[in-house]
Image 1 (cartoon, rainbow, N blue to C red):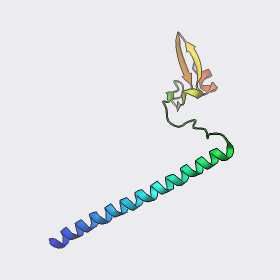
Image 2 (cartoon, rainbow, N blue to C red):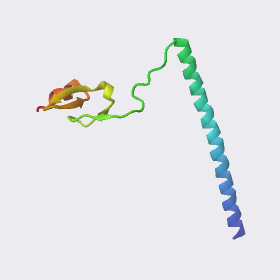
Image 3 (cartoon, rainbow, N blue to C red):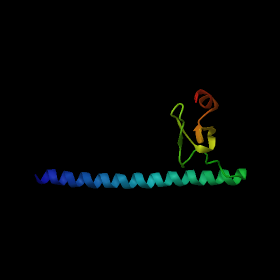
Image 4 (tube, rainbow, N blue to C red):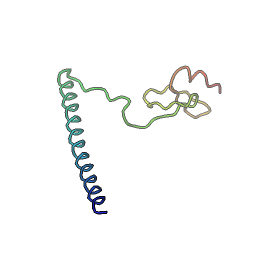
Length: 95
């Protein structure tokens, strides 16, 4: 019984230690990518595009695909503005 308890405590310690090491490695890798992005920004003189990251998405009423509102093709139908993902979907909706 004591041996099982000690194995359990040892396992918990090893898992906690591994989580700490993995967390430190993950933060280090993230910092490397941030530094690389900052270097790219200064080298090119412009900020990298963040299009498609975050924000709200709109659902196309024709095909059901979610897409960013900035890429919407809009059409007014009976006083309601509908947003489509492409010109093909806009043309498919026969209202």
